[in-house]
Length: 127
Image (cartoon, rainbow, N blue to C red):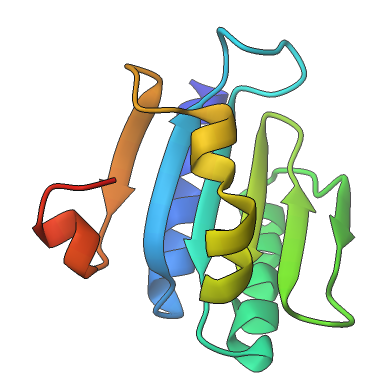
């Protein structure tokens, strides 16, 4: 039950600060290192940093350990390692360039959830 609670907490923390294009990708069939990756966008360095900080604060408040956080200085791509879940908060250009969803989730059944957003691609049924 712990990873499910942590996943909900992370998505809620991202939605609280208006994170966009939130996706949860189940990685249990791909690696034993973590259960899921959460990818989200922020529109500026400041918002990316705020999203990552909020995830860390909410995780700690929920009794989860934050193992590490990388990239806060620049704020273009911040990675928050929560053990069972790895959170990537990125600016849209960085996310588009690295395409983590394709790398980890592809278009197969591993993709778990697409939260909020309202991108043209999602509206058109493209991913």
